[in-house]
Image 1: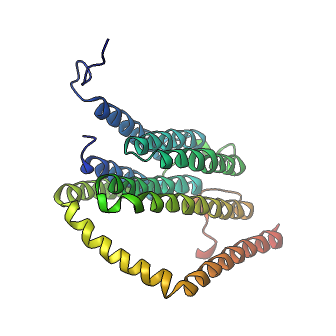
Image 2 (image 1 turned 30 degrees about the vertical axis):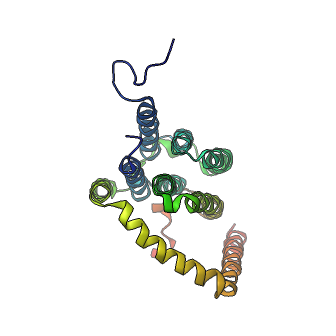
Image 3 (image 1 turned 60 degrees about the vertical axis):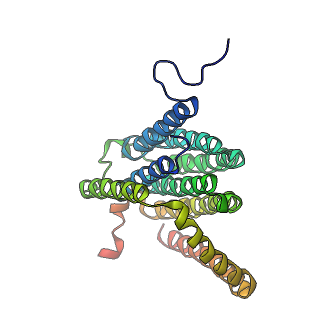
Amino acid sequence: MAIPDTVPIIGLGWDDLLFVVLAGTTLGAGLLVVTLRDIIRCGLAMIVSFLSLAGIYVLLGAPLLGAAQVLVYIGAISVLILFAIMLTESKDAPTRLVFQTQAGPAAIAAVVLAVVLALTVSATDWGAVSERIRSATDTVARVLFDQYVLPFEIVSVLLLAAVIGGVFLARREAGGRS
Amino acid sequence: MTNSLDAYLVLSGILFSIGMFGFLARRNAISMLMSIELMLNAANLAIVAFGAFIPALRDQASVIALIVIAVAAAEATVGLAIVIAIFRNRRTPLVDEYDAMRQ
């Protein structure tokens, strides 16, 4: 028996159905991440969100990125975050207030940002824009990695030094106090 | 729907807004880091979508997205290390109780 071109009853194509399901899962899990009270569950919802995003990457024709997403985000970053949660969570924390006092304005700002982004996306002709952006990026990249490659590398050393210095300072403070 | 760049970009924008809300509204420092990860993922989705729909960007987009993933991993490591270092000092992960510099 052949599979029909579109999903029965709903009338969407299979790709579209997959996109709707994955997008819904991503957004729903994302909302859970920012609203749930128990932070461990926030972490687990974040894993679900990352996983469905990996599915969307595959849907977009980038399976390598989907694999990298699963390996790096779900395999490494999520585990790291869950460990950090377990290291920092005290027993009374989940019962206390989850949101700061500016949660209301933050929600309004987020909704406004979403609407503005959606309007921008629908009002822009991306094909024409991409050419302009690309030529500018090309020039910058050529100059950056050709002429200024040494300063570029020095910046990476500077950042490394900053990280080591930050960790060192945090350590001293801990030793001095407790 | 899967053949339109707009759908993916709108999804990315909404995901970014959710992350921004979480970053602004949550009290827990680790929740804020998770929100930052959501925002990075939203940006990555936009990059991959551009790569899939605009022929001129096809090769670059995957590379850029992979680099973003690597940077996000580094950011999560350093961010969590900072949170744990502060937690050792202050015994709380809630950012609005980090008020030592105000006094």
